[in-house]
Every structure is written in structure tokens, then in C-alpha cells.
Image (tube, rainbow, N blue to C red):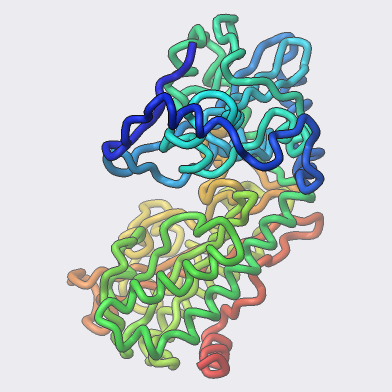
Length: 467
């Protein structure tokens, strides 16, 4: 049965004569052999090991992991497609609507929607979603097998009536066709947990993402004179960083947070429509996502004038000391929550020294009163998702211990709301976060984002050299 074409509102009827004409006369009719420019992806051997580990975790069971589907942005316009992270981790493939199946024997097959032959039908020039002339060529079966080093079959041959564990909520067609079982939640958790410890290839991809991100931050500092003069300076900064992300990677790994002045007190400020006041701080939280979909996540808060005011420096130095204490707590065997607790003890000490809070640090840690000014946790796992491995069980992740190969962020902050009457007026509207990416090593942790300065003196020198 032929699927209906995804044609748009301005699609024109096709006569029999035109249809016949479109099927012929194309140079180099598609050959059976794989073109020489199609080569195996570097991820392929790593993905094969991961599929083997997954099959061994669920021996004798059928596992179904879909890539996901295109999502409508507006009317007949889709967002750019990004596959589900678990699917990308296991295949390295990136086309929509495909499905990975691991059979009870452990053998894996990638069911794909190959590009439509030009000698057959009208999809290649009429289908707005999948047609080669509209969306670009998809690999054919032989090309996909070579690129991903896995057996490939046509998606129309996929039989989903056999009982299986399935990753649900990714592809509605798969959800509807795979009989629902009790083991789906366990599969989802394991697919997250197996990504907690990064392999050598992943660490390299993450380091590449961090390095590109550092260059993007440098771009921003160089562009500040022009951005400050624009009524939407935050958006100017967003665009400058986004250019680096698109030139060196796939995109940004998440919507960039470009928060000047009191906007920095909004943890996930992504409107980015404000002006830049030279007297204010700018909080930039941004990360480049590589073409392999690994993302960095870095935050720097710097003075738009190039120099911290005394009160800005006072607040910044407290966050800096908190982050330094958190980084020092990272090592194999430490509890995941330890680094956050180390940072918060420093924050509590500082808030007490300033006279904002009166209780002892131990009491503040117990009651959580300090959270009025810092709000959230101080870090998370990082990888294919900016908040990576989020479906892991608490006992493995949040209540677990650090291992060599974990990659995570350390990002304490202070957020002094502009209308908070418990604060002296000079602190109101100041928001500061310092965030770095680290990989846990045998002896502690390596600062992957060391190319960017952290200390306030270094920040000022860095800005002076770039502007």
C-alpha cells in the first residue's frame, strides 16, 4: 500500500504526461553499489558496543527504539528534526520516522525510510516532508547500512505486532502498534542510565562542544560594543553565539539564556529581548551542540562595562568561591549531591557574613532559608541532552555516587530579585551564575571549560584583551 503524499496547500495537480516525464531522464540512474563518498560514521563501532550492552541487559527480549517523528511548528512547516537521544546513542543515525529493533537473539536491524526511487511514484518531487526535492536526500538502504554499520531494512517491512519492550512517547505510530507491556518503564530508565558513564568517544565529542562554546563566548565579548548600542542587545548576543554554533556544530544545545541586569534573576530567561546597560552584568548561559548532538553547557556572568563594580564583585566572588568548593568535592566515590552541598555551605557562610541571614550555617542548610537567594541545584549530568540521563532512577543518579567518566556541570548562583525587600537596595536585581563542564577522572575531575576565565580579575583581563 502506497502512503499518501505530504503535499502543501500550494501543490499543483500533476498530469499523467508530467508524471511520466518526471520518472525519466535523470543522470546516473541510482546504482546498486554504495557511492565512494559514503563512509562509516566514526560513532559506528561505539554504537555497536552499546547495542550489545543493551541486548545483554534484556536477554531474549525484543526491544523497539524509535527515532521520533517530525513535529509541526506551524501549519505545514516542521521544526528541524532531532532524533531521540537514546536512538542517536545506539545508532548514530539522524533521520526521522526510523526505528531500531533488537531481536531476542541480540541481532539488531535499523528500519529506515529510504529515499524514493525517481523511477517510481511522485514522492521525490511532490512530498513536502520526505521528498528529495523538498527536504534533501535520505540515504538508501545500502548507504544507510554502510554509514551506520548495521543491517538496514525498509520501514514498511517492520512488524510491530510481536510483544516487545518499547521506548514510548517518541513515535505515536510505534506506541499504537506495539502491544503495551510492563517492562517499558524499565527500558526507558536503563536507556538513560547506560549513558551516565561516558566512553572515550563521547568525552571527545563533549570536549569539542565545549571548545566551540568557548570560541562563541569570545565572539560575544568582541561584539559587545555593537550589541550595547542595539535596542535588543540581548538578541544581538544570542545571534552572535548562534552563528558560532551553526558554523561549528549542529546548533545550540538549548535555547541560549542571554540575561542582562535583573533578567539574570530569571533562571531560564530565553526571551532575550532586552537592551544592554553598560552598568549591568550580563549572564550568558549557552552551549554549542556538535553535529553528533553532544552539547556543552557553560555560563559566564561578566560586567558589560568591562569592570565589576564593588557590589557586583562582592556577589561574584561569593559565587566563585562556592563553585571552587564544589569542584574540589568532585571525585570517584563521592555522592552526587556532595558538590552541591559544598557550594551551598559557602553560600550560607557568605550570606551570614553579609548579615542577610542570621542563623548558623548548619541551621540554614537544614531549613533551606538560603534558597530564597539561590533557588536551584548546582549541577547536572551532561551529554546528548543538556540535562542528560534525566530518566535514570534516583538511586543511580541523584542519590548515587560519582564514577570516572561522569560528565557534569557545576553551576552555583545567586539571584537577588529586584523586588526583594530583604535585600539592601544595591544588591537587588543582581543575578550571577558561573557554570563549567567537568569530567570525573581517577584523581578528581578535569575542567573541560578551562579556556574560559572564572576569577573576576581574569574576567576583566579577558574582556580587555578581546575588546
